[in-house]
Length: 168
Image (cartoon, rainbow, N blue to C red):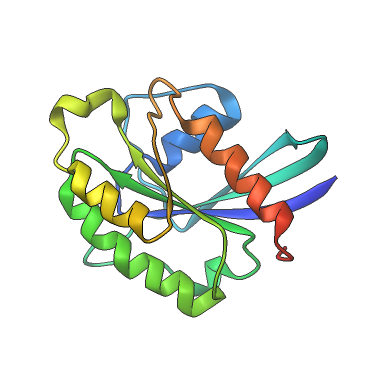
């Protein structure tokens, strides 16, 4: 079985931990628990007949007082960026995280998940914002850690891209 490291990156409270828990354990909690440092989970998936063990590194959220340590990205086969659609400021932090990953790893498969699709009536991120990122060739999905919508497709797409690359 092939093993691939995937890092979850994004601002604090975007739903990174909730997406991982929904994907790994089919569980969702309304309680917010801040990740300290990094939490690692595992999930085995099948991608076109190939078994892949995903090592999911859930990195502590970035905010103005704390930044993600570039060393956490070392050895990553893919990055799962998470933006909270209900908080526009989390989109602004995405560019800095993408630059950090580019500087640390170079080109690496990446997903940008606009999370909290179940709260679309509260969204502050517009269609134009999403379209601009798509125009740059980014792979983008709307996800909901609460309902599971879009989440499995995003993880499986990233696992497939990681298999195609020569990383990890």
